[in-house]
Length: 155
Picture 1 (cartoon, rainbow, N blue to C red):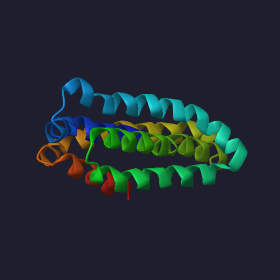
Picture 2: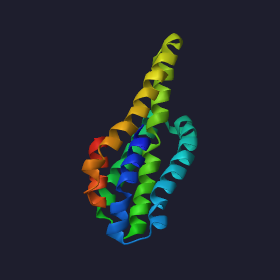
Picture 3: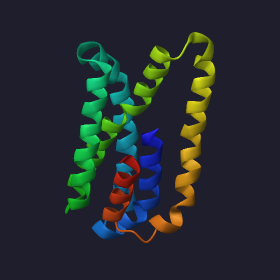
Picture 4: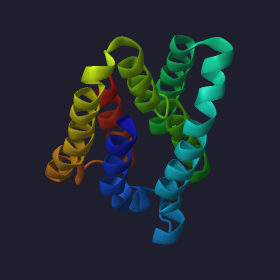
């Protein structure tokens, strides 16, 4: 659920990132593209990590990655460092949704799992609407402010 939220925030902030680094839109768009590609690949690998080290430790490692990127991204002075921080963030935040599904599977009875998944999907889709409505507050921010907003949402 954090992935749609983060990618929505950064999509809205792409113009400011492009302006601050004085890059073409094609290059700046790699922030979102790499975020989704890395996140999709990382979600596939998380299951193996869960088997080897445990779900809780995998989730905590993911949150540590998100924390590192949330602290490092606003300090980026070159676009490549910002891109690397975004990739680290996508790897870390990709642990959240699979962890939620695993918790539902482990702690909710089979009869109630379908309704729990329905509630989870409602919250996942509602985040996009909420972030889109925040455009007025995101538009004037620099790219650093965009990452600070993302960090605030995380914590």
